[in-house]
Length: 356
Image (tube, one colour):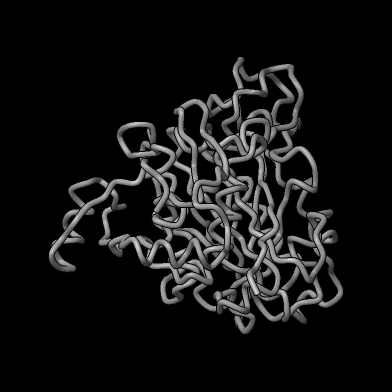
């Protein structure tokens, strides 16, 4: 295999190999599949690309991320070769200038890299877009998300206690990957809203906090008002962005992602844009609230409780994904806040090129 940056290690049995991967610091804390040369080469051959191809860089850490490194980490995560194109596109997306990986990967806030997969590939590799969508049980979801985390650690040096300065973290930093349930809704899929065709497959990466589950009555406005309340809560990155000072612009610069489950007919007369139009002006906090928790500097003055700060700058910064059980008896959704202001890291979508 043509790359001197890959360490050659020998072992006598599988248990010894797993323990050696631990001792070399290649693990996320869970056992990894030993990246045996022939298995890594199988992944490279599956996509038919140069193993030394540079998919992106982390210039602040003097790191180049090659296809071979990504293949090795996909093997260790437990991926199958047919998952590899998704891992490649997610890696390329998070290494773009727009995503600005150095910001969310070294922040004290501890974002996970959420990967949302759209298009035919999600069905071809049997990804989960329904029940327990953020939970365990699906190999593709679990191992693709885990591969991204291992790439961050092993190829991008985002190692806890070193460049990963997370104070608390969340379980999505082990694995954080879902598919959108495109076939059971009239809504436009996320990738179509972001400029791709339905026939294309894509990976969208989002610097994400944990999902905040929302349970509400099966009535549209009640469901959305409950979601808005969770989206607007104090203590999130959106409500603690120092870019809004007293007397400054009353708009934050973050993004937010909503996953919405429940029967499709529940929203039969609503589009995603209809939902954005309703929730966007209501995802806000008063200047008084933000001053009380010191998210805005300055002393409280009369009228602050009647002045509001928008927590996302534009309706388009509310990303909506139809995912979760389509048979939920009561309406359920999840609110996922972005880690940093949009000016530091923004969601990025890249096409997935499947091999024939």
